[in-house]
Length: 340
Image (spheres, helix red, strand yellow):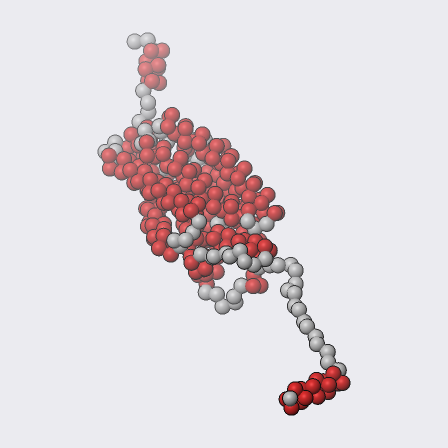
């Protein structure tokens, strides 16, 4: 036999990884995604509870916010179903064929990044609108957040397209540039939104109650501002750039996708009862008062933190003077009227 033919035949046969290599690959890829699936499914229960509470209490919200909640809930349900199918396909159907796990990824596994992009985009609509209502300066931060999010979505769509084309784990474990670009711009978008909200809360801290419970403070500063989302995005970015040949970054991103929806519903449910009862505005007062009332209603609907008013409060003091002669004359006139 020709030696060249033998070498060509040997090169055409793919090398089968050993059991140790397969075990290591499972730990780094499907093992990480399985743990993320457990955590994400539990958080889905939190999302359902928050959505149920919102639908019971805040029945008079504007139609846009209510539709936003329904869309987020539908996306989260589809995301959870895809995640469960992905884990079932790898750990049940291909239990006795581990090499198939790395050679072919199910349609549900390739669908997860796309659903994550759609879910984060819908959630960002609410937070971008919330930041834009803070003031003129903050509208530019909202515009920057939109631009960063567009770049993030473009990179994420490219990664998703590679997954559907190649149908293997290498589509998600070897493209550090695309992964870093996608998650990096997500970090920039979160920094724009979270920084604006934290800045306003810090300026208005003097008006806040001193005896607030600890959980209320954590919810206001850590969850409702998107700080938790930002921290998890940074962790995912570090894992995507510092490591290779694993899905650790995807596992963190899977959990963070659920945190997006949890943060949105937490902001809506932490509003006061005035937002739930609605605010009726009558047109009988001055135009300035009507405009202020409408702005107050919008702020309460979107749970926008307010900056402290730099103008001092106006105090009107009316001083009446009275001379001694005037008081004597008024008393005499009063006696004459009594006699008559």
